Image (tube, rainbow, N blue to C red; front, side, top):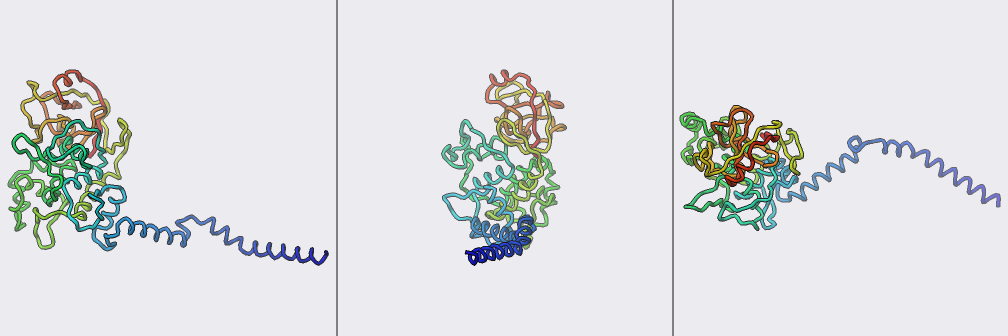
Length: 353
């Protein structure tokens, strides 16, 4: 009996000594944070790379746009059709680029009434994005007779991509007012400058002046070249998404707004097509009048600026008016009756860019 007790005591002593010998290592390991623990850090890095590879199996890590594509893809800002796998040099459609722009800017589509394009249907995945792009003046469409088309599945050209990006940055008015002589001067050194459509010359010249784009290594602009996912992702990531990460955020009308500044209690009035004071169907920016295009004093809010008006929604400062002076904003609504019903109101206005 005593022999068994001695064996049991010796066994306990051995277990105690082993526990004491490894305790410092256990404590040390527990005290390390994941960033301090080299094994944990290595595992975390390897896991991140593995996750990226799983998400982007056809985008090599040494691709020049890998970081841009990876960031946008993981944020859900790259949309592919029919479950296609993402490859960086595949062409991108007009609808896919509109989706990329709006998600890059943090503009959420809202329920839309009506259909402004013959070739965009409510059951299309891109319907709410194209309609939002139309509402805020990002696109006007192409008019053929009385019918308006967007051509969502057409491949995006480089001149379209540059023009849309300039507009999405809220700089379209700055581009519009560049004198033709100045635009020609900015473009004259590029052999293929005359391949640019007239509507793209000023925006392209502006983009070159501001460093938004540049020529290819051979000195050509290639405005008719079909844009790739990589090129589009690079433009949106650097031109829209990265700047957005430095903006303020607010919850307004149930959605998240990314904004640079806020005008509290701005005086709002309303107007509609057909009123005696509305001279035509085009705004000062050359866009069809519609909900989402508002009139401002350019000395307060520059034309081309994107806004969010509390209780009204996303908008573009696209027009002016003789009575619109100072902190006043005139909201376009769908009918004269709605304009009269609106009267004068005071609302918070968020400047998005």
